[in-house]
Length: 268
Image (cartoon, rainbow, N blue to C red; front, side, top):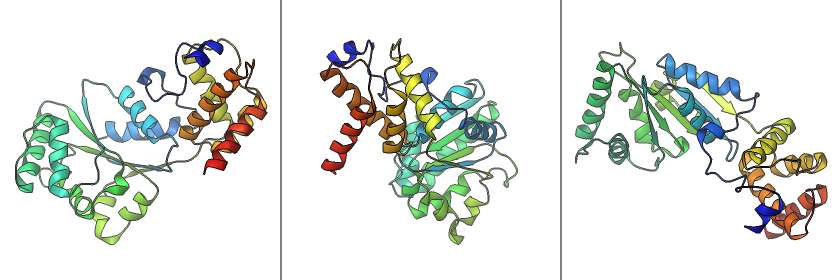
């Protein structure tokens, strides 16, 4: 890709294909990661909400990196649009377990597996992404999955991740059994201007940049155009790098960002 060579980059800087070790977690978001890690180590449950593109999945990947493999088993479930039986079948498949025809049999398989992990001194953590899409019958039943030995043992942690409306759904009276069990309730907001600047520098350095590519004015406008949402930062910054390379610029200035943003607005 010629635009990468123009900027002296080894790889696209804003791709999602980045290893956990190179993930960027700003100091402003460290407390949220720490809270969720603490919830897991204390065998509790957690809720993480935020608008699309603010970095919720990055937080989950940071969690995966920080929890020791020896004592925990993380299972990521992202197909939240299923009814109760098929949802638990999906969990079974994610765990590598045999699935069954009836909801009761599938649930029993998962519960038995969780109990066996407890005997093996391994704490399972179920990460349920897109939780705002969960069917109501799943939400009403999830608290039963956390109940072991007359609700006297914490053998499983649930981490629910979704859009802000997830919180509103959990607060409904019919979901209060699950809501009351979630003691760690966090919300991820859009990053501030310093976060956007730090993110850009980090991702560019990881891609091989050895000089400043974006001017400070360009970064300020990029933050404004993206509202601090990392997914939008990725898209706009990539388009700006390609546009700047075509014009053989030495730096991305405010004008390039303004041009890219106005083109997107025209398409929308």
